[in-house]
Amino acid sequence: MSSNHNFLLRLLDTPGPSGFETAAAREWRDEATRFADDVLTDVTGNTIAAVNPGGSPRLMLAGHIDEIGLMIVHVDSDGFLYFQTIGGWDSQVLVGQRVIIQAAKEPVEGVIGKKAVHLIDSDDRDKVSKVSDLWIDIGAKSDKDALKRVAIGDPVVLASRALELPNHRVASRAIDNRIGAYVVLEALRLLSRRKPKAAVFAVATTQEEIAWSGGGARTSATALDPDVAIVVDVTHATDHPGVEKKIHGDFKLGGGPVLSRGSAVNHTVFEHLVAAAKAEKIAHTVQAAPRDTGTDADAIYTSRQGIATGLVSVPNRYMHSPNEMVDVGDLDKAAKLLAAFARRLKATTSFIPS
Image (tube, rainbow, N blue to C red):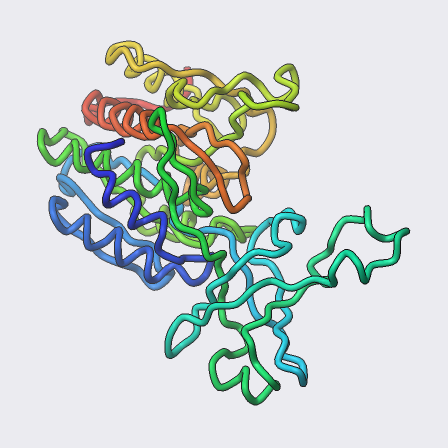
């Protein structure tokens, strides 16, 4: 496990659905203040930590700190809570889960209910459960009873904690993408020990999982006006049964960071990342991105007048489930790669494709 694994586990266990990232951002900010030159939070909720802020060029390292979750939208007269999803869920994995509602006074525990199999018509038993078929039971007797503890619009996360497994594996509901925020801060920690010539800003961005308009990545990139940006996110590990590698690529837990090529990725930034990985002997693979990347990179590279952007991903099994899984060694390698990339930058470095 990483030398900073206690921080990683705290970060993974702290609730922070899109739009409600405050608690997770606070953990990240508290850690950043231990070594960063400057730390601040903006109106969108992005938290920014800097090393050598007066340097050149200006490098933004972005990892979104939000996770997928649920939101209470209705309480019926019997006290059952109905919800909608925050971000993209496979509704099948929600059935029977325990949840924690982030209510104003204190967290409220509950369970996701569904009609028992014995009560479902035989023709319907094999059908996929929809979110509209589910509800949250907090043990309330009525709507008045329930509304003493929760409110419409309260966010919800699954009641699960990070699980440490053999071979440096860790599982959590919030791997996507709390680990991206973790990696960019670990890279900044490395850079604080031997400062680069570049100004480096690590950003824990908000609202990526619902960021149809760019979310916190777009607003923070606009404010920081970086010359170059690297986004850290997860990508699908394809080292488990049932995945067609000729369609989705070959990415393994423990295989090191995955470097995206194409789409939102500036070709010169990609080449610099590959060169840094080779120089530092960091194992890595390359992922084709013929269309959008589905990450903060899509919002950043078109911000302002255009920002040279790269994408570094960590292989992740079981994405958007209660038990996403990564190899912690891949996190350490990704952080080292980002630090190496930053140290190779000069004020004269050009990112204009040639």
